Image 1 (cartoon, rainbow, N blue to C red):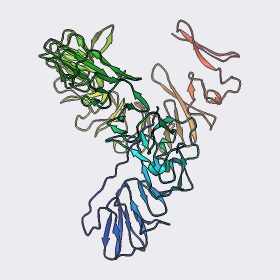
Image 2: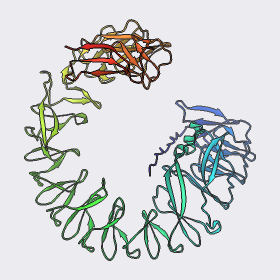
Image 3: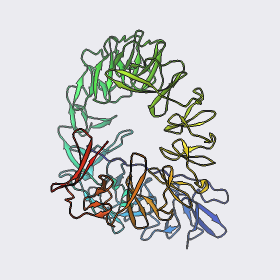
Image 4: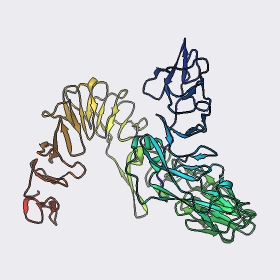
Length: 610
């Protein structure tokens, strides 16, 4: 089941000082104002034509208020809403005697054709909303003409008069319904057909970012409706245990219980089991009475230690582990006993369990050295060791090192660094692996950036940085840049009030106004597109493109002279009609000493490389 995530929108409420109706509405003399804190700056807007005497705010949601005649959302009166019967059901649903409404951050949307009598709306953040009333079961269909339409998902034969929602504590989606006769499983599956006419802005707020998921409700065969209920993530009745729509065979539902916090490990009076990817499997020879959780990954009984592999859903016995002394170590899937340390259920050879220390997930150390993913980092001083930003480098008192795994060992390479570096105070800047600083200087790839100010230096990209005095490309200051009007664009382009710059050079042919970086090979000035190339001496050439309809997604540069997109081939920026755009490409020689630009018809260029 491929379920698209739904991000919950969080409202930030501000308490205002003064004569306050509540956090959203402000009473001032004979007027009431709505304070909108969702904007970049708070807006104070008058609520017009209210009955001041009967005006009150809904406690359930302080975006709503009403008087004797009308209901208000923020500062606007809601049309065709009955004030007497209007009520807030929850954060997303409101209703009156005639209609049910979906609450978004910007407006209230009527759910068309859904009778509010005896209704229940289950808003879900990972799968579509389910709506139930006396007439049927529905889900959202489309957003059109300012309303949400619904479609029926009611299965044949279900008894609406006795229908119940079977819910469980902390369930993220509704899985079961039942009536007096049967239990029904709700299956969420990827839709074969996406809705094409949704208004995207409102569809997101209306839960329709899940519109590519279909719902199918089917009878769960051989269940006892009277006794069926949810137990954690499982369904069960007096006879059987269920996971989703599958009966779990061989587990006694009467004595079933979950072991610890990992809901996939269970036991009954006959054995201990785990829920694998496809089926429930018994842990062979596990002792029922002493079986317990050590951590979410590790379990033990009086005889053995077990590792639950969250990746493949399997439980494996930890070979050689001592059950009596085994304990979990803070960090993902780490454990130890009196003899050894274990990572993801496997013994790490050579590690001392007494002096073992987890550093941050992938790195750990003991009295003998530093380890990465269980392999010794030879030559690294464990006492002064520190992982550097993004795990690209490590450092100790003797230097900076790059590293990589190769054939079950870690290859360590010492990095050439600026002689001015003070290793004790050297730290990365923000989350950039390229930039670092110590108490005296700023560095790019551990080489000193001349004259950079340690107190004000900020990376602006992977190669561009600035401080109060200037802008820098890699290790050198870029001459002539106005720092006060500096703006980083992207892909090593930046500008000030006067000029456009690429890397360490001013680009004379462009002006700051109406200049745009499209991608790694295209820029735009006003309506004109340019592609650019660099030679081995870092000289950049910008080539204007004749076409105004370049397909940006498929545009590619073949070499200094030739380029193409899905529609056209280009030679020195002009449309090259002679070439076959589908087969035109750059073909390297077998020994990489040159290339040809050619299509299925002919060769257009031969280039020999030194």
